[in-house]
Length: 136
Image (tube, rainbow, N blue to C red; front, side, top):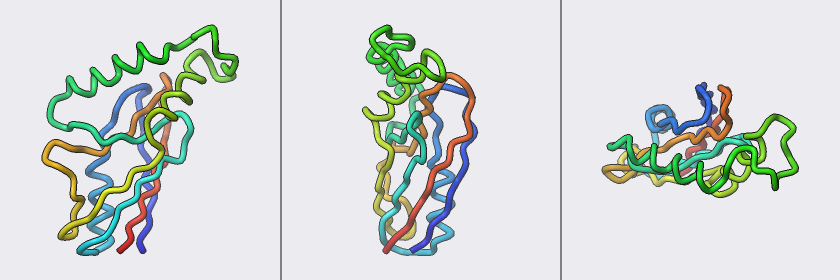
């Protein structure tokens, strides 16, 4: 087993590709086949696998979530850190806090148009920690 944490600095709400950082950790593990588990250590950010070729896909994902879970919704009681606090938690619940990707020939076995992304749900910049664990 091989494990390493990566820190991602965000500029606030948005979707940040981290495929390169995860692939670099996979390369360090020097395993031909196995599994790569990626875990986001936060309750207001998440992980997604999404298309990495057309940036409009990522914009459309954010448009969908902005309509689905609105900042400042008066139904939400939890707003200790501002109007985006509870919406960030809900967005995180609706996506994923972890992903598992198979390894083939020492590389992530992602599809042609797939990438791994950190989805920052807070409007302010944050430093997010993602734990990557490689097993065979």
